[in-house]
Length: 137
Image (cartoon, rainbow, N blue to C red; front, side):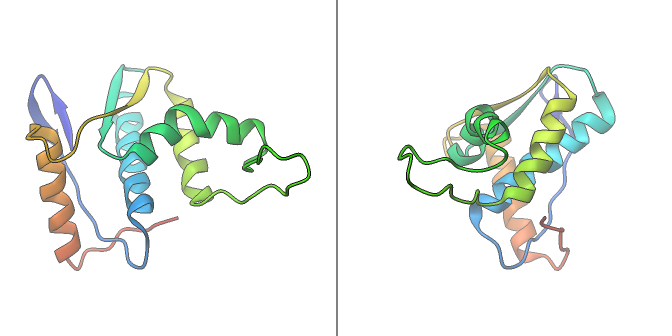
């Protein structure tokens, strides 16, 4: 969902079959970035997430992965590089975040009574119970 001046201006939900929680968190970030870039490209915006995986990935790990050719490089020189989980999703998220340097991803505590986070949980529950499916890359 999107808020402007404390009012919800857009929201969406979907159901992704046979996937992990981390994948659905990335799908949410991707869909938010796509919406922001489609309606307010170049404007400052914040995508809030209670997923440490999504936030750390967006703000730290993806830059390392891009520099490493989208591979995880382990510290041991003789070890092989490891594949990145959700690589296609991460590439799509990276593309969207690079389009708007004023778009940031920030962490918020989940289940702490924050209005936007509670609303996101409601939409996630609606998605889990619906027959409306989203594509997961």
